[in-house]
Image (cartoon, rainbow, N blue to C red; front, side, top):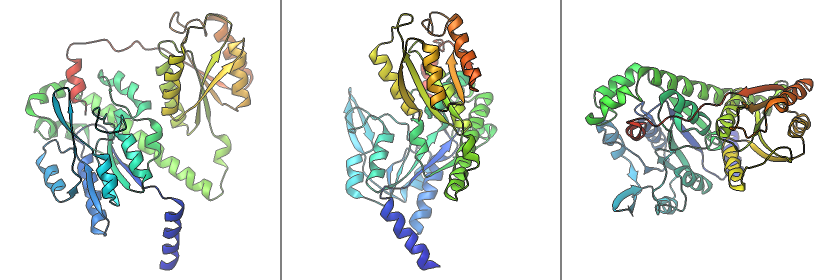
Amino acid sequence: MNDSADRIADNEVDVAPTGRFRIYLGSSAGVGKTVAMLDEGERRRSRGADVVIGYVETHKRPFTVERAASFEAVPRKIVHYRGTTFEELDLERILERRPEVAMIDELAHTNIPGASAHEKRWQDVYEILDNGISVITTLNVQHIESLADAVETMTGAKVLERVPDHVVRRADQIELVDSSPEQLRRRLMHGNIYPKDKITEALNHFFRLENLTALRDLALRFVADETEEEMLAYLERLGDHRRWETKERILVAVTGAQGSDQVMHRAARIASRTKGDLHVAYVRSSEGQQRTTESDLARLQVLAEGLNGRWVILEGDSPAETLVDYAVRSRMTQLVVGSSGEPRWRGLWKGSLLQRVIRSAGDNGIDVHIIARRDELPTREGLQARENIQG
């Protein structure tokens, strides 16, 4: 039995040279993600693994500082930028050290210019994984790209740093670090999350009870979806394809007008919750005035791919027929379009054209979702302060 297990392990090494990737996911700052990461590092070290700290943010919390002190830490990179000195993850030193496991906090972090060849920390993590080093990391749910807009609407705070969904989906394991909203607020009031001068503002804004409850619900739902996905993948490996025959396929139509991002995020959430594929389509048409620039299309494509979607540009004189024809040929089960208010959607889905999409899609057994456009969050006094404490 042990020999068989050893052979399987050897085969895994042969076919999977990249490192293993584990994410500790939390609903907000202060739930205990960093401590959970350090606990996992200790567990692996006790079993003989070479574990180091690549980057851990202790926020000067005594218990976290104490836990981190027992590990070897790869020296941070010192970066001078605009008259200020920063300490950042040193990618080159980690690759040179080549541990078995690197603990790297705050996956959503944006690197200070000059700190790395990459703009984002998750890109650094990708390179570390590709060099055969396993990574344990942390992430707050509001930083997941497909959920960020919903969090902004719920909390009234901008989410400035975002991790594409495909990065999170790459993880071999996602573990939720849970804490009740009441417990989080108590920890905040006791000074265990933010400095005393930020506590009152946090309690009245991002750490309001209703916000924390909604964020916790998002995190629980996201992890539940991941668990179900793992089960379905297991059934597929067993050769049981009965449930895969009814897999949902979501097509979202975008125009490049204001509000397209919101429609794409909503479609991505539909695809995620139904375990479906996501396709994002833009129709080039001579019907009506086309004012979408190539830079707008490039930005939409980046967002679509970040949401784990397939980007496609369709050509046709009739947008409705072109879109539905692609949906039928690609076996789409649901079609998502934005509401038709002018000039927000620049005329593409106005009036009878939207009706033709609905009628034609319905005739082909495709459900249609019309997404109402939400205005952008207004600028409010104190928004910048809330951005600084959202974690």
